[in-house]
Image (tube, rainbow, N blue to C red):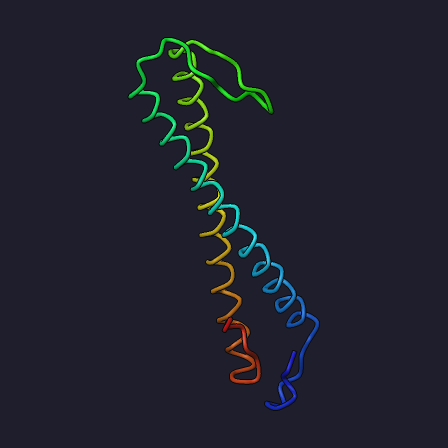
Length: 125
């Protein structure tokens, strides 16, 4: 844990806190990637919704899996709205998890820096 310089002994509990911090930090990075993807999906769905408003066609091509199908415009509008709702809820859930992780990491930083001072580095470059 790099505590040899301060003379502070690393206890089992300290090691558990360091491990938990590392695990939370890894999850935070994964979450940031998931949030970016969710935001891009929300943006794409919003763009699709706006494009649909501009079209004069009664049926539009809608991708279902790997296939494009001709679907009535009003059904596509309904599907896109449902997809936007699901995507927004997912993004909100990811943001809440991120806030929880940041809070837990802040608590662990306080505990670990309190004991090890400059002998431990929990900051990313």
